[in-house]
Length: 391
Image (cartoon, rainbow, N blue to C red):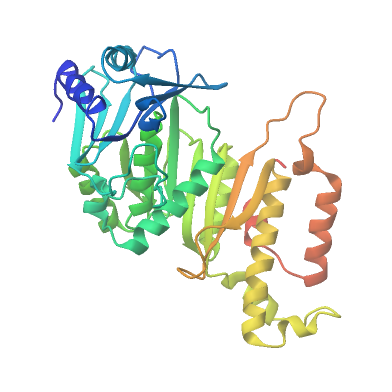
């Protein structure tokens, strides 16, 4: 329920100056305003001269840190930060976590929850895991907060954080293709909005019952105006306008290819895809003898399946490069938690007049890709889907 912003900031001020403070972050901007710094982080520290409130700010180019004494100095520093038009405040004490978001109308949406992390001595080193999304966040009440799910959410968010530039601001349009029950979709929205971005996220799943379920959850969380869901196939679902960021997490077999093809055709700036179930090329490998001298790679069924996984994702990464993306294949989550732990991470390379786009359109890369196809006599589904796309 929205509440007056002044009253909410008064509550934030009391927590920032309370001895039980463990950490606070201010980020983002209010509609029509821009703070003098992009981000501010506050935490208590123990120095030789006594306890201090450490305030670290960044203007997007360089960080600045200062330590202020309790009393008038800390009061003035906190008041100056609260006067900045930040769009979001996240405050943690030993007892409570408070999250404040300023709405378009200038009111405050506030969520309070019990603290989940153990108290840490000021200035001490917290050896506990630093989660990108607080384990006590309200979304875990809705999506489930098992240790395994929190680990997967955190691993995904770290991959997402490594993909997007640190200085990204403004509106970010996101689509999650094949979102299923959408727990990573909601986690992505929560994390990105806490970074101060104006996020508009659409989840796509073929099942109408999933669309209804996810829409109801978005409404319960108060996010229905920014997080929406449509029922449809990855290839054909209507998503307008085109997104900046495309997610496709554990889309089965050629559904991953359909997601990557849509991302390329949209001209998405960033793509994160965690492939699953590589049946297409595995079937093509079974249908013909392996080229010499690689018969041993496909003689045993289990090795042939694993080789098909590697070949499929290698060709996907190569095709993305040939269509203007800088691409990496990295570990998504530790293999102890799931064997499907690869993540294709791609960023569109902006070409400038008179310059090359690097490896994305390099003739040697294209020749290597074609030679690999000719040797194994396979046709990747993604190549077929992108047959008439620029690149």
